Amino acid sequence: MRRGPWAAAVIASVLVGAMFLAFFPARTYLAQRRSLAAAQTRVAVLSKQNADLAAEAKKLHTDAEIERLAREQYNLVMPGEEAYAILPAPQPAHQHTIVTKPARTSRSLLARVWNDIQFWH
Image (cartoon, rainbow, N blue to C red; front, side, top):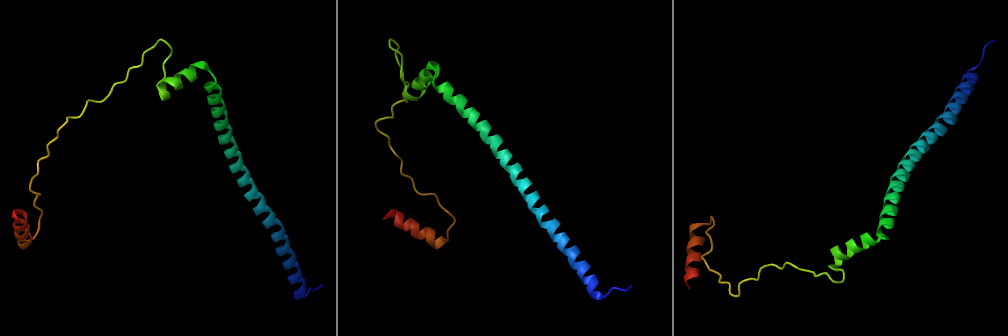
């Protein structure tokens, strides 16, 4: 029994249709797996940061940390203590500046002569 060319076309179109039905969902599935892996990585990083911040917040509620921050950032002292500050040395009252002739740059002879003439006027 001989089949016509239309039978080969039907079989080919069924195979192509089956390939499309398998290919596009597989591609979507792989893209979703990549997205899920990236989201899980972000969740892990954010969970670690959240744990670190929770530990820091817990530490900020202790008296020792409050005292350390008060001393370090606000220069506060406990009653009965004395605070000392080391100041920079005072600047001299008079500072003389020496005016010198500007350094010569590589210019043409005419420009240097003109500059010397203007300097002496």
